[in-house]
Each structure stands twice: as structure tokens, then as C-alpha cells.
Amino acid sequence: MREETFKIEGMSCQMCVKHVTKALQGVAGVKAVKVSLEDENAQMTYDPDAADVAAFKAAVSDAGYELVV
Image (cartoon, rainbow, N blue to C red; front, side):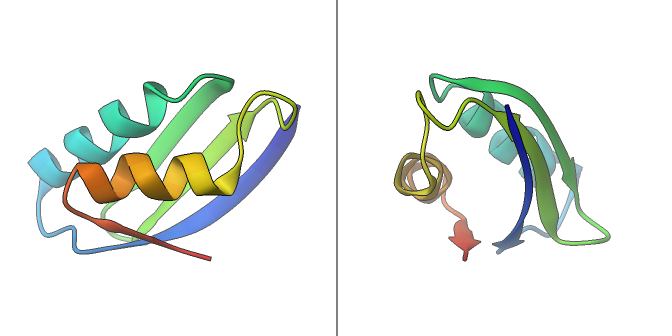
């Protein structure tokens, strides 16, 4: 398992947090997600053999936000 924190841009409310959380939880290999509006980030635990940053970026982008690496 790997733990990383990624910056998320475009969030402005708690509904945004829910959308980003749901998007990231939908990526195969993601075990835990904690999204913070205040810190503008997502703390994630995931299996690096099953998930990668490109998949995270795509999921967040599809939800209308941007994951910055």
C-alpha cells in the first residue's frame, strides 16, 4: 500500500468534497480517501500495482475538478 496526498483544485463547498471523494473511491485499487476542502487536498491509501496517478487525475477531471501533481 502507498499513502500520498494530492492537491485538488476547483472545490468550493462540501458537495465538491463529496464528489471528489466518490470519484476517487471509484478507482480500482483505492483503499481509503480523505478529501479536505480547507487544505484543498486528498489523502489517499492505494495499491500502486492496481491504481496510478493518471487514473486519479482522470476520475477527478470527470467529476469537474483538477488533481495537481
